Amino acid sequence: MTDSDGNLILVTGMTGAGRSTAAKALEDLGWFVIDNLPPQMLLSVVELVRAQDDSEVKIAVVVDVRSRGFFADLRGALAAMAAIGLRPRILFLEASDDVLVRRQEAARRPHPLQAGARLLDGVTRERAMVRDLRGDADVMVDTSNLNVHQLASRVATAFGEGETPAVRATVMSFGFKYGIPVDASMVIDMRFLPNPHWVPHLRPQTGLDGPVRDYVLAQPAAPEFLAALDHLLETVYAGYVQERKQYLTLAVGCTGGKHRSVTMSEAIADRMRKRGLEVLVLHRDLGRE
Image 1 (cartoon, rainbow, N blue to C red):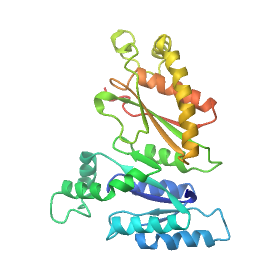
Image 2 (spheres, rainbow, N blue to C red):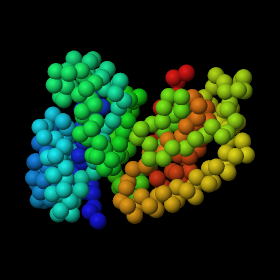
Image 3 (cartoon, helix red, strand yellow):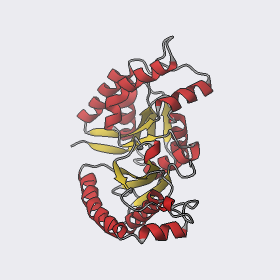
Image 4 (cartoon, rainbow, N blue to C red):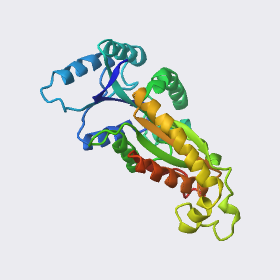
């Protein structure tokens, strides 16, 4: 089995999804960032890294559809690295079509694959080109609802300094009415618990407030669920370690992402931390109502 090279990251994804922000965040973390590298040069970069006397040198390479022949050349370059037993960690940045179009319009730039057609046509072509690469990603981040600081935090959690834990986890609360996060490794549905929305004095509060937290965790099914999830995640952690997967995104949903999912995300994260995992908690839809 091919090991991933901890000192080499491939940053890629959809145009407008935040590659520049991610690259800047990696630069701030001490990575040497190469932007818009032709895929044919990837193997040369890897050989350069391996030849360094300083084994701690860390290189992040940004590769995207600005490079001609992107898909075929990149897949070939990755195959060449795999042939010598190396695989870079892949960070793939994603966002919804409407967000990508809006960002490109705000930047007043055409899409690299637009070719005189609609901007959305360029996005559609790009999705088809990167579909398989998206499936190979070690870390996939949906930036549709993230600001630049939140994206930088996600990057820091995944690729920051310090001893690398066996599994790095992100626990994200969300509301089903706003859609399931596309970057989720696992999706958990909290709608089996009574909804604090229907308790008048709890309705205006959130799952971060004590009264709501106490109400949710006092439900008999809540501790039962948390204990069962502990057991399930033990199996998942072991499998991730065996398969050399380092990044887990657990999406915890309720109707609006305000009460149950928020409380349970915090409770799940606390239990993960007690097991020694590095955990980032995000509340994607908190404040949208």
